[in-house]
Image 1 (cartoon, rainbow, N blue to C red):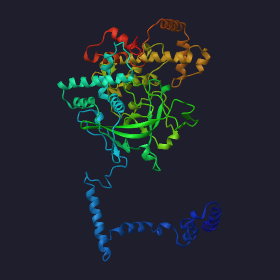
Image 2: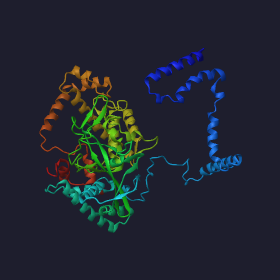
Image 3: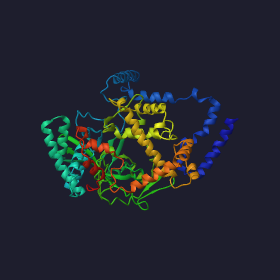
Image 4: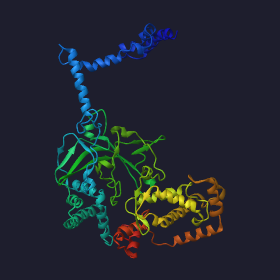
Length: 551
């Protein structure tokens, strides 16, 4: 009965569709369902009469026939040859077969640096035949200083050069500063190379000398599993791969801006025996919230393709770790700093996530038993992983399951809670003398704990009635602990008197520091502390309170 009902309904449905869609839609496949119900009634279930597997197998055997006079023998020999090739391909690891063929956007993987600069061993694969034409002198200089400022191994030299100009009263423009650094860096590396001819120093020497005039340009580039095409090449294709995005990160979350642009050129700069790839891009105006960029209620970002950045400094050019250096026309960007955009699809970009509180993803992604190594100086971490370590301590202090807020002072926290905090620290980080610094690390956490309670008071309690403060429980804070903190701590006369006294003392300060979140110990470490020659108090005072190299 069901099959009879289906057989009667199918022609009616097709007739209704013919009233809506054009005749070209209705080929033989569309009319095929009219016969399926009757076929099922006559022959039964399809799995017992399905010819597709047999037809598919015959399709595979047909190309094996090389001699039409002996088709059976040709099929047998061809099948045997195919099986032998399949077996051999599983053991020939260096041969490109259908079992070992890399993915379409494979960039070749990381190259072996052999102890040299990581800059010269980046992964990536160029697309298309190269074209050669020279860059202007200012363009080549801009690309050169960008490479130097984004090379990790050059960072100590940048800091050393900055220290040399600390006491200088002469204010240099960004262009002049860059030019002087290029010359100073060249002389400095040349001196060091006389006593150290290692691979790293040799690469630094090559980098300091600058790129040659042989500049190659490509139509595309594959990096990080993504395929990029320049805009001029992409405009002739249906699929667009010229869109790029750089996620901007500053010290303040509220000022973070994602920069969207179009790839205009893939430039290969040639050094002596080495190569560096840069992206040349046009960046859209992300500062004009009315005409340049709009974000709707669903988080979809719309970019105005008619408005480009007119500023020469979308990022602070004096920052060592700046991500991009742009001019009114273009910018040079390292391919590894680029995120994937989809060409003209940049007009409508959906944000996958919103930057919020500290998630410490690098630490959270560690495998079981995997730990990050840190170095201690003056009982605090410095150098590599120092920032991750401090962020991890902040995560512990803000975790209400580990660190309590509802106590009178840090000294009142129970020993098992302190042991819990220490276990959370050693679970992610390690050092040669980790246990020796236990008390110092807990003291560091004490400072973060007191700072957090002060921020909670300033943001949620100060200047507000007690009842309103009790209702406004901060995110991530236990309600009971918050009530205790407001009633038994923030509302006490002793705390109010201490808070007013400290506020009055802060108003008397005439020269505040300008280092932001960078700890003073990092400045001491970089200015000679790592060599056992820490700077004097006058130097520390100047470094922490200077603004544009002047007090």
